[in-house]
Length: 111
Length: 115
Image 1 (cartoon, helix red, strand yellow):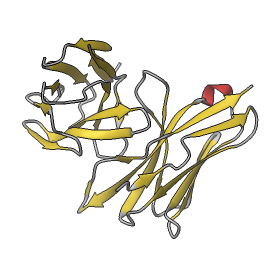
Image 2 (cartoon, each protein chain N blue to C red):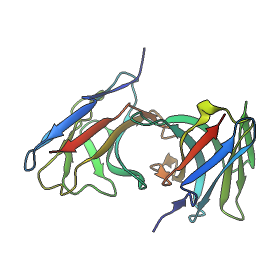
Image 3 (tube, each protein chain N blue to C red):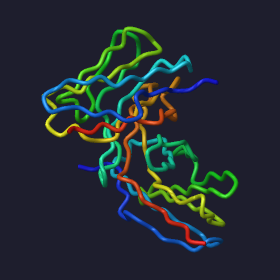
Image 4 (tube, chains in turn orange, cyan):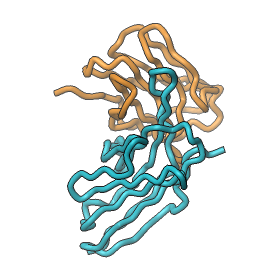
């Protein structure tokens, strides 16, 4: 079955550590996105990539980095520069720009 | 500034009755609107969409209405069922010279349908 896989489901990070969230899709979608969800804040765009080897900052890119070396993969690194990383992270993809397909999310907690 | 606003953080409805979720937007260039449903600890799932050339789109129990002059859309769920209890996100896009821009989301409305 085609879809988007995010791993791990839950992730704990010590303060000052970098951590990478995985997002893999087998839908052959060109565009991929990372969103962050905080209570009462909706979904805020961190980074997006329309094509392999190219990506753009979203509204809240500070403290995050991404890569897009393969069409299927769009990992997100939460760096130590991100001051408030505890959140629910969602990856999405789309073939045309209309209507995104979302993964099941990763809950990141700083301990 | 929020371009997509869902002013009601929560809504409680009795099973079998109508649920009406509202969404306002500020950018008149938006030309495509979507509703997503999200359960806790899961990713959002697409529910229904509407293009700006229409004022209504229906899919089973779900109907979306678009009022462009008021920059307002609403999602109607009839009849509401307990399984509809979730957070509903409104989202909007605009077309940039043939390419769709990124989805802009509202903050969501938590719907509770009581048996």
